[in-house]
Image 1 (cartoon, rainbow, N blue to C red):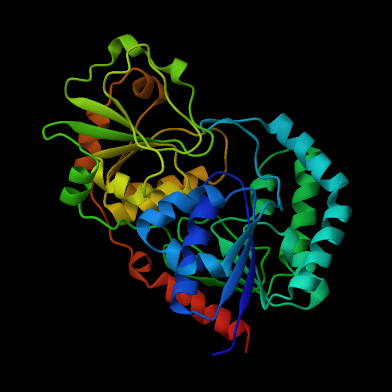
Image 2 (tube, rainbow, N blue to C red):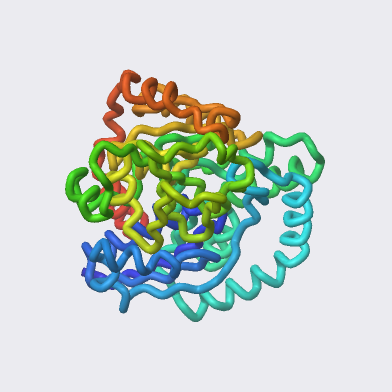
Length: 371
């Protein structure tokens, strides 16, 4: 089998991009001992400890390297529930100012690295390089940034959206995940199955592993890379006699005046923590929705600000997940009972796409591109 080197540019926007792409690349390396990869991203290495727990990392770590590189702007977040569009505009202008020098730097790097494939989740920037160097390119994602930016009316967003649209058109193949927004700027696309990390333990094993007590409900707070301000919560209403808050995030902690009933489990295999929990409280994002699906954990979801991906995620949540909406007021006041009951009793319509062997689909697409 031919040796293949993948050069993957992964967005630093939240955890969803890196968690799914890294999972796919690791599984592919596991299946192909002769393949290697470089991850260009602001994120990546912080997942190594959880990968050790899941057992994959030790088998492939000598064939993968990480490099801190930012290939898109994303959306600047105040926290997981609110965006800062003014700061995003400033970041876009700064990125554009430095774009030529970044393009030269990355092009020279890839000339030396000589990858067989350039992979992007989900920036358009790498396709400028793949087009210039005549290297096959692959997009993986559930939205493109030109679509996200086109949603906002300011001239900066609108102009930048048009620029990105031209860059996405240079991509050879777009692999479109479920829970997707309309993707029109990539000319050649293929719908694939759900991609995300999976638990290694069943429910009983996971609860025992994390020391969860019987007759106690555990609510996993999953607000990703940006967290949530703990001062929003009305802590005098918190009753930990029958409930626990579980924190498993890498970058944020929640602090209450009375810490009773808050369980912090950092550096874990997050899908196992999801499986152990009775519910996950979150803002909808691809990463947590895919992993909750594989863990079989009901979702209580709240608003995440004026982000155009939201309505597409909610549409799928309402039809295919044990889930229920919870308002910010109810979330912060610990009025969770009604939403919890609604999530458990909600009807689920299985989606055949979610049952596909997505890793095999990606592998086959790569091999087809490299023929």
